[in-house]
Amino acid sequence: MLKITQAAYASLRQHGEETYPHECCGVLLGRFEDDGSKIATRAARCGNTRDDSPHNRYNIDPKELVRIQREGRERGEDIVGFYHSHPDHPAQWSPTDLAEAHWIGCSYVITSVEKGKAVLTNSFELAGRDEDDKKFVDERIAVV
Image 1 (cartoon, rainbow, N blue to C red):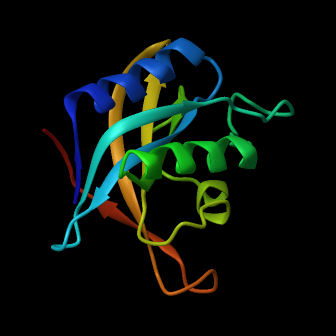
Image 2: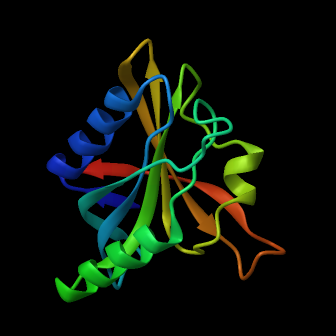
């Protein structure tokens, strides 16, 4: 289960609306709980560095990711997931989303943005032992 603060949830949905018709992307910071759930307390916006197809693909610059991870650690936060939007597409992962997901145990949150308005937000946990058997599993979101 992904527990996410109201502020972080609102932020990632607003980010999708602001970047429409392109995909937005970002990092979810928080902590992993002993019961296997994750609590996301902050949504860190990232720039989408894809210039070939930003309406249906995203990429986070590795330098930006390292900076966000370092700043999070300084505040006692871990990277618990990532988010991006699907402009005029369902809030469902694509084969490309799975191929480009590498953080096993993290949440991958997708918001469908239809005609500039955030409609539905879903989460998927990247499960498996390694790259060879990774898969997305539907994950419940609780806004807290």
